Length: 214
Image (cartoon, rainbow, N blue to C red; front, side, top):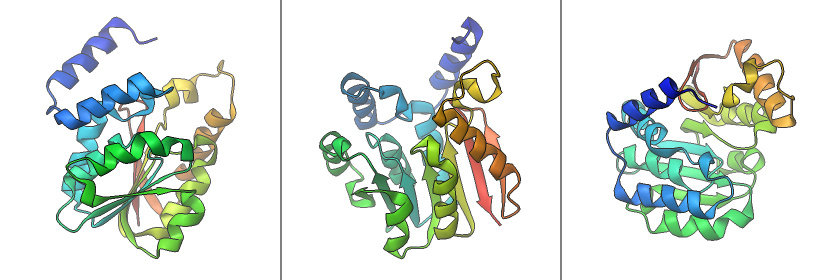
């Protein structure tokens, strides 16, 4: 559980960060009301960071692994220039009925392609070279997802990996190492030894790793 000071700092940061658009706030609310794991949505602070990173890096094509309710896809699409596209994959087909309407009715619907399927096998079949990828899918297979993303992202492009601090479990020796925790730890250790990239972990929310392909 977060202590009082941490919670107040987080509240202060959100108050001093540009607000999310009303449409995204409604999506965040609907996600937390109707979805079993609503906290998985990126939310205000991370969403504004994703938009700004896209504006800074100016990618043409973005690959997202793990759409969930579509919040992060819409944030990245907000930052795209004309002609840019987010290709977002969701492996859980039960998610489609909730997510697709929110994506297709959004102000940036023309910048998002929503695909139901396994990105690890299906994304390379698109034949697209991506400038940026955002990994936020099954933590048990982060290493495999990363290898796929690295193969389709251009040299000098960026990969973002979410949840890489995993609620602090990565540094808690008393925590039961479930498959998802082990998947995150395996990925973090693997990335540290990977000479093909450089990376930095930001202690934002649940940990966000920024990776640059050399």
